[in-house]
Length: 328
Image (cartoon, helix red, strand yellow):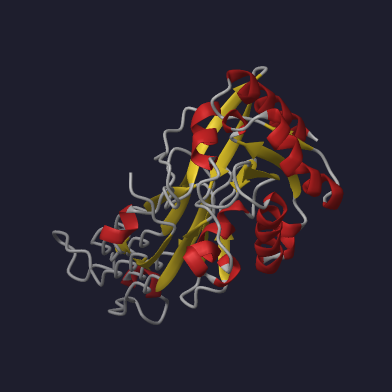
């Protein structure tokens, strides 16, 4: 499935139906009174969040959405039928912005939330409404009101418990595939992942949702490598899983590069709880690993784990640690 996390669409609520200017026409009644009914209300445009959706790709091919118009009133004081509301389904995590793409209208954070974005126009009044003691045969009626219409932006921010970060080729997608049922593209070259991937990990009858974003590079906070586009997908995460490739020459420098990009992008990301895992332990001897981690231990306070994504034992350990950190 193709991934799209931003789309501009046009929405139009239905216009109200016109009122009717009708008069009774009955046998033996020469001058029947007014009997024109009101017009029906126009349908509204309503957005609904859906947990099973994870992309805005459908809005690339369909960008104009219109609710039904109200039907006009008719004789015998019959009100026109109201137009049907248009329900537009979007993924949980979708944000609706005004056309300036800056003013937030609504943020969907739960499943099956509904929010009315454009209201349908009210139905017009039939001439029966204008009957009075001085005007027993009014011809006046009103048109229905115009439904709201405008362009809006949809932006998707993935909602997950854990956000996986690291440099390209650190093994993030392999980790996601090892502890969840997600099947991201995995290869031994940088930038295999081009879009965020989601997966759910289960441990001790509890679940944790993980989001794997493409590898970050220096300058990501400014948009290098589309980093700013991807970083916003982990702003909602409770915990960051920082994965580092043990085979790299300077582990400390690699760690600090990612921390620097997070802090420059936003204070929110830099202050999130972090768990650090050093991956690819299966490719090095223990003595070499200890030597490489020595300078890291001297400069960085905090716990870290040494793992291999190909070890079932390590994957169980990771699940346990993640669940513990999310539950805190």
